[in-house]
Length: 308
Image (cartoon, rainbow, N blue to C red; front, side, top):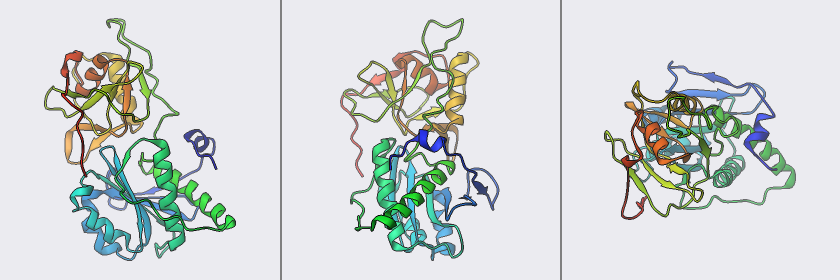
């Protein structure tokens, strides 16, 4: 089956989001009344506290954050997640997404867990929105054709649930692009706040952002646009002098989940995927929330290499 964000949009459905502790960024249970599966999501910092109470859950799970993701499955999923929370190799993760049976007990058979791990890994590679931290490929048992067809339906349901849970590992928000494309102020100097979704590709020259202690990295793509990389920070505050079109673009990308709040930081947002801007100047204004120039992007002597 060929999956795409457009296909998902053509098949609307209703999901229920339950927040037993209140708030919008804490523990949440996302379920579809017509389906068999549900997704439980919570910040990674809650993992160890929750692990003791949910140690019997067998599930597939996704750890995500800072432009990276780790996809796995386990008979004791919450125990594994609690261990990942203190593992330096998984320090990138800010959110946990647990895929499990909707009904009590929250268990999932081995074959289904293995299929979802394999399918989500494949979809994440196709989407190219994040870098997978997995070092071992998931197992691929020889499923019977009729069994594989059933599991494929569960994978479709999982994909919808993950999207509504806020997971941008296999699907972004690209079909409903923000409306600020190509528009600029009457008082502007002609720079356009064009936002162009683009896949991750190697950067021949990497630039660092030097302004107000904001950590951000970027590079020019082959068409001359400027790409701000996933994991880069955005200053939440914006000055009154910032152009209207940049303000609107910031609001649109925040609403669509392209940039999201950072847990524990009230003054910063973070890019969840690579994002292209019309020019380095527009990218600088967007990241800083201020009317600044492209000179704040400083070329690094060589690309930064991240190690696990």
